[in-house]
Image (cartoon, rainbow, N blue to C red; front, top):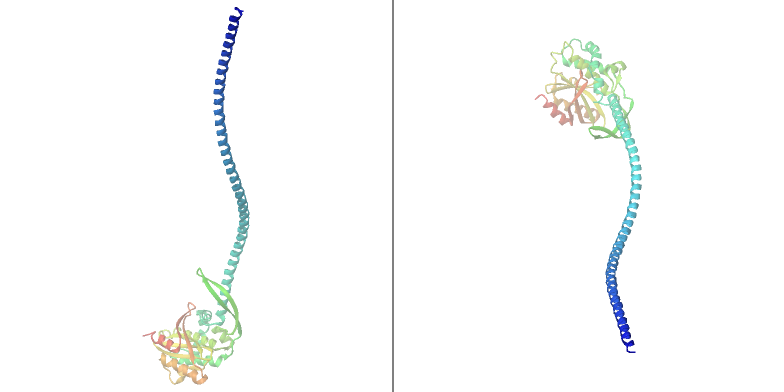
Length: 354
């Protein structure tokens, strides 16, 4: 028993020692594990935090991606619309090019047609209208054509009054008054674009007028007032320009006169002008200043008023417009000397040699 107790105590002591060792080890083991667990826990929390942040970033990126996807869809739609508009614009551009090309061709044809209409109108006017007809009927060729017969009529006389009477007498005795044929003329409305005249409207008017050459009037022995006046003008021009008369008659000017009457009619005659005085020769109207009681030139104002009074008394009409042309037969050109009322023309001619 005495020996057993120390043994038991020793055993208990060993057991206690073992328990203490076990507890110490367990205690050390728990601290390490707790430390490791705590460290792992911190890492886990950090991972959780990082994960949460990544998830937040992911959601934000996902939202941005969705927004970009939506905008991309809109851009695709807009791109599709732009492609459609581009296709349409390209088609329209092609059509416009075709239309523009057609317009250019039409414009060129229109300008060419305008040019031809204007040329045709000028050609017709050169046959039926004074002054357009003047270059065709009063030129050096036509003056030469009547030169021989003129000298047969006037001879070698240098007396202008005598020559005027003889020419006047020849015309009224040899040329029968006939009305002109009907001629279609062109009435145009025009505009000027870049210095080019374009026809905007065309109409046709039938008029009874035709201006003959002096040579044809002599050949046909017929004509109206302007044909007789033009023949008388050509013969007087041939007389004045002849060798025998050119020196004495160098100050003589011969004008072609056209007029409008108060009844709407028109007429033509010849005015022989010298230093502010005049003699009027009108075969168709059966008027010559020399036959009115004087063989001398009279002042312009007096003679034009006498001429108007002649028409007033014989036909009950007045001259409402008078136009005077000077003609350069060598160049086949005319110059407007005066135009307007009787008083306007008297004023212009009276001041011509003042």
